Length: 262
Image (cartoon, rainbow, N blue to C red):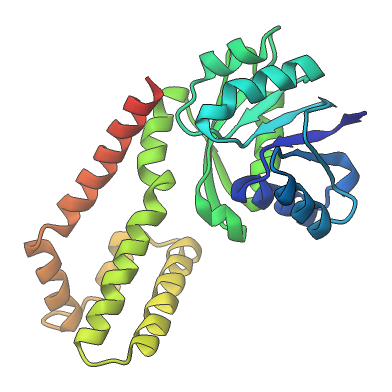
């Protein structure tokens, strides 16, 4: 048995990519998922008709490594024994040199850093090529990750910065959402009303930024009338050092990513 793509790891991200690929036109027969936990195997098999869900790797044209960092070496070595032509890893903090060593025999490897909005088809991912991977492998990785969001190409040295920005970014925005909801309640709104307004404000603002073609600076200026409410609110944020705190958060997460990778 040789499959077109074998997903090593049936967790949330692995399943998100399987769902994205099926939704973009891949056939279930082209995919297999390797998942060691039996109840999870049964769950995936019941959810995706025709999808092979296995407990051990088989020969594959390509593998997607979607296991926890501590399980990557074992997964790579098992895939190498089964037979693999190329690999895409979304395992955080595991460098290309280690992946290439564990997969062996000059297997082309692409390393990626996706984020959790991939679970709803709105992810952001960056990819970096290993020493044996060329444009063909990068295009292959883009096809897979592009099924659940946008993909950019960077050098591996920049993946830690990607981790600090977009990989950890949803956490920062969820914290902002929590604070805004609490602020609405403090100002007198019922919590459910505040949550609805905040959720739609974040969603709509993101779409406006993505679809209008305007810069964040221009969009912020457009909603900030001289002497108005937004100007007052922005002044309070600047006085509190929110901009500096965001810069520090991204740099701290980037530094931590480097530490984990070493």
